Image 1 (cartoon, rainbow, N blue to C red):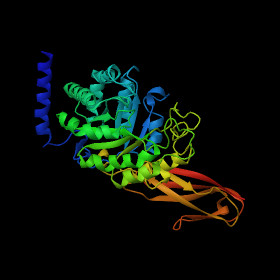
Image 2: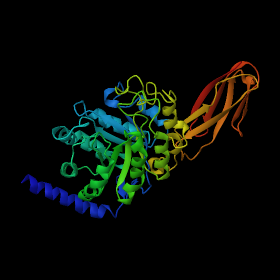
Image 3: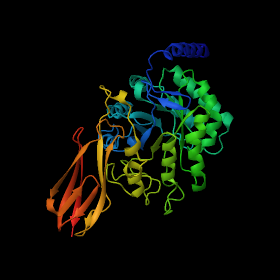
Image 4: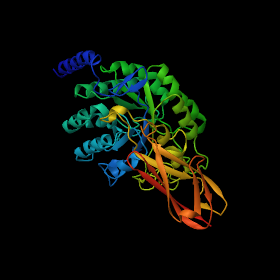
Length: 422
């Protein structure tokens, strides 16, 4: 009887989708390897992961406004199936979407595991609170079944059978949102996803599966794998993102002074309009690489408080950073006008001697904000510096301490940098 009921539910979903496909969309959806919003806008994910569930900020009131300043369009929400109440995860989803970011809740308990641990994550989603909360937010939510499930021993047959059953369960329970499936081998087995992805996509009655790989690859493998995500997946007709990365380092080489080719990965993914979500924002300190914190981008989750140059590059300074490439869908806004959410002012040097010059750059995020205009002002020892806005240069005129302020025209968001002239 249970199997009969399940078949009826799946038949209903398939019939509903046949009309849904020709009506207005209600969720994000995939088509020929591209992710679209319900309004039909291509969505190239740019954003972060954050371990909210183990932090002091489980519902995101503190960290999400800080992440919002980057203009990120997506945020992966790390969760623990054993944490209650589940309403906190729903509040976290609500808060993410309220800040114009796609919410990607995930179950972290199956990391590197299979069998019962993965099934426990699947079962976690069979909860009325989560079903109601996610479906209420279905326009802007993606359900990531389980983090990095499986080690190096998972066969194609086992992967297919396990995730086919999971897809069937989630659809039977009433989820219509896109389902995200992580690669095995702690998220790194991109080849596995390329082999099984088309069959899993075909298994879903809604045809709405996103695949995710995590870029903790050895340096000699990294560029080839980024190319597979950016190009080969689309050639196969499946949507794939880097769900954790581009990665600066990996466990086992934390103290290596030469980072993995993360900048090259960002460039390649951008050129082919492939999505990525960096691990991690830094509100909750990582346990891996504890003394060499490439896995944390910020100090205590505060925008602008970068722990290292890679963090600054990933968030703001690289031309392929989140701030410079994230585009938020216009349909996120009632008036279809993308608003500025953050501004960042960067100076090459903040300590100058009289007669010296330095360059500066102002970044308004997201990259497609309708109004990118901003104003500059000087406070403190105003006559100690001169600002050439056209050439984006600062000249040191006489000793003193000044503050350069950049303020966006849209929303009055500001960022300031102190300058000392000696």
